Length: 365
Ligand SMILES: Nc1nc2c(ncn2[C@@H]2O[C@H](COP(=O)(O)OP(=O)(O)OP(=O)(O)O)[C@@H](O)[C@H]2O)c(=O)[nH]1
Ligand SMILES: [K+]
Ligand SMILES: [Mg+2]
Image (cartoon, rainbow, N blue to C red; front, top):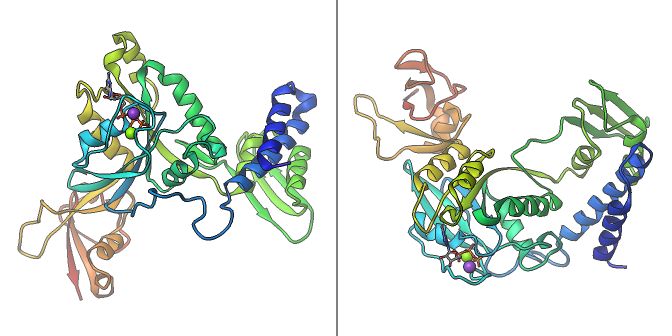
């Protein structure tokens, strides 16, 4: 039996099985099996670069990478052509786009790489269409723009989220609060720091056995589920930020626009009527958590046209590296003007965390 068939069988069994206390262990086990087979399916078979697919090998460039994911004909290419200098063919028929088309969004002096991709269909996770390649590219992005057709937005959102879940992509959430470590001996060491309503020591043990793990330390710090535990054991999950973009609001009524706009992490737009594009870019910038740092030389005004673009959380040391590899070696201190310091200017060391739009002067030894 092939892996696909095995997966299908387990999925059917899960669907058949009633969810209750008595079937809890059985379902947990089935889920672990399913996750294992899916992982096998995603492993590239054969030689180097297998399963990568032609036309998907786009170099990373710029300060951040954003991937456009969505069902066919939701307007991904139309958007790329609108907000970048690149034009990507749009059409009223599905699968107009068959490869990965990169464009560059210029915003706040940053270069943000935007990737147009083929439409994903149901079953993408099983490798249908070019789903696997699209998903592989999406994994390399700093942010996913999930583009949805406002007319059928909510069901599309559910289906796509499920497809991405199946290949280990988790949107807008962090890893489960479980500490897990394999050991050489000693059996299972199990501790929970809060009451558990989904997991028990017995179930954890069963799931671990499914992975042939008999010795491990498991510390559960939240009311986690069996799925959470499986995520931690599999260890290859990616936790990505996602913005839900509801396009074509020109085709729905105002009440529906209002409802979609109020959803978490959502933005409503119309490429056709060029509605709300500025707000989309603003949100995109916020989500990427990028910062502009302006540098200046002693006795000279800062250069406000050419900031260094860094990730939020960056320190003066990161700024040094962004300027030049060797600057950190001759660094004495930095003067900072901006909201990251109490005084302007303030003398700071390498560990100082900078903020968006700080001005920085480096004083060398
Ligand atoms: N009414 C309306 N139509 C739009 C809007 N944006 C795009 N379209 C139309 O939707 C159709 C599909 O647009 P594309 O940009 O090709 O969509 P896509 O998501 O790239 O499609 P694939 O590459 O096939 O997956 C085209 O006919 C566009 O003109 C919009 O805001 N409103
Ligand atoms: K299309
Ligand atoms: Mg397209």
